[in-house]
Image (cartoon, rainbow, N blue to C red; front, side, top):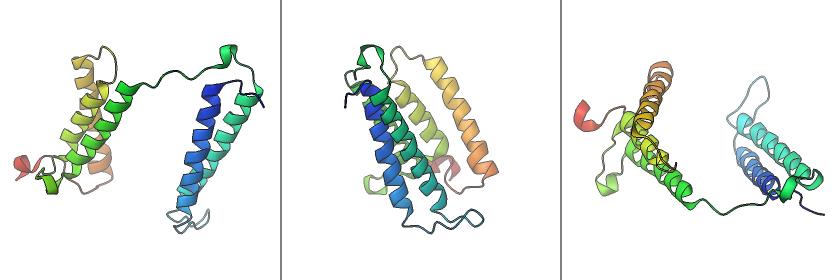
Length: 162
């Protein structure tokens, strides 16, 4: 068996692994059926579809010839670092870290921090474009989660809202 596309082969394996983990994790919840879906219904079938997609991609990587073998390049450590840090900071700002004395800063501040930190992963990022993106995402998130879905979590920092 000869791997004809390394990128597709390993991405297919990743899809199969993540899909299997989701499907297996969803079995701990009530799955229900199509008419009365339980909390495990969507993750189970999403995991199954992801596993099937991964199997198809892996099979194609073994069967379809690509130019140069589609070798895997070096790890992009800088983008990986900034994306992970951005998500950690988002969680810390949204909910706060009482153990360290960091209060919840709210949704808006967390989104701005997320977008600005994550954008540092890009070479030659521009402040204006990042600010516009953060503003659009903050407004859209506020409308979707607070106004439309009526989710209860802090939107603004506690020192502003009192």
